[in-house]
Length: 65
Image (cartoon, rainbow, N blue to C red; front, side, top):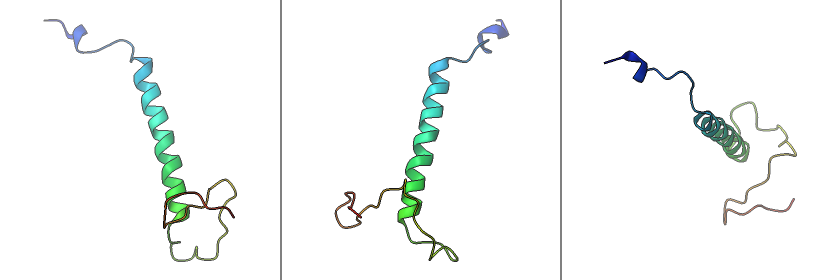
């Protein structure tokens, strides 16, 4: 049995694309969740960036500012 079957020469591009898109989605969703959560100690008076939407905790929809 040859080792060439176990080691591929090139990693499939769609695997890399799925991982990159998934990572970007996780970072984006995590950032929105973090900015909409309670601020950590020392960050209570910091302004919310304009790019992060305000999420209403009661019904889960975006609130108009």
